[in-house]
Length: 531
Image 1 (spheres, helix red, strand yellow):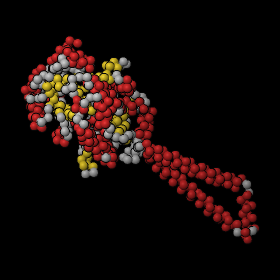
Image 2 (cartoon, rainbow, N blue to C red):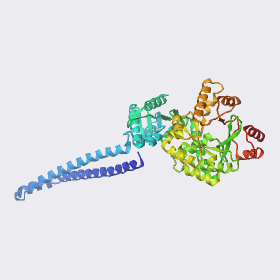
Image 3 (cartoon, rainbow, N blue to C red):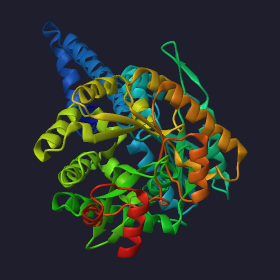
Image 4 (tube, one colour):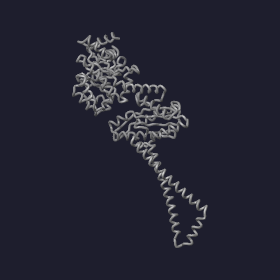
């Protein structure tokens, strides 16, 4: 339920509860009136005197008055009974609004939480399973909310196929579903999670188009993981987060170390909010090398964070948290501002390469922000290269073309990062004006021992040369890898073989010593001396 639906349902519940109370008060009043009349008749001779008076005065037609009173009493009784029945129907309807999701007709969060609390009071073991659709936001963004709503209805219908006396299904959030398994046995919860994920993953036809989604699951068990209903739900949510963080489309059962990781994640998120404005996260620079000559032809900007509270926090830890918390925009802006300011003092032929996160492409102000940074720092637009991943392009297809045109018009160059790991590389290479392709490090890692990897790299090199686009290999760590890539015709490379990412101070010293010519050999020697 949305917030508006919840408020309307709660308002309807209160109105119907008030109506039901009024009906009960009316019924009590009528019952008291009848009991009082009966007592009066039984305890006194009023009734005998009254009928004697009626018989003595036929001209007053009091018998008609009595008959009308009887009919009125019967009418009031019928009215009270009908009002009571209507209030019961209204109460059932209001309960349906309060405890059922209006879109899917499944029980909602309130109903699920009350079921969890009843289970905890019974002190009997049960399992709580949380499910989340992995790429639901992408469906909403690319296909529209109408398709998203129909997708949720189809998922709910598929979940109903698993209904059983010991299984309660509920929709507790936007694309989040929950299952309460009351007759819990070892491994049954995990088995059920896998079966549900397989059923939901089957393609579905919506609005004439095939849609397919994956499902991640988190599992917590009572009383082994927690003894309160809210704690069980929270720990199932922690397990769900770990499942999504591990690759999505997976199921994870809660373990004690997950809670420690969640505390660490929360601590990093809190520290990140303060670290960004304070400038704690700084750019380091990894050289990009021309394989044929060994010359450094640019640097990739990589964020590094040395927290005074948490110590060294790796990019693999804080970048996903920045994306999840919406801090990636301010973080990127701060790091790029400093990188551009520092690069202005370098030799003018050396550009910097900067990666843009997928979520940033949804910001319509992104091109203006990048151009404003260049204007503020004085770095020439031709010295800035923006890297886009295939994931970013897939998530923001229509919007990306507009951003790219604006940036290219100003002279900023464009690189396709992690080539070969996405879904639509050829499409984007055909439609977007890339100046460089970066082959993913997974292809380079096996190039020494795997003939298939070498053939794949050779095919990508040939493909890039046909398009007339330079190809850069990431993650080059050994001299043999560098030799093979050179033999295959790869143009550029980066990796530990040619130098790790270093702060600007290390580069400035190198520029001062070797101002006329910059080669990766000299840079490595300088790094070794400084180490």
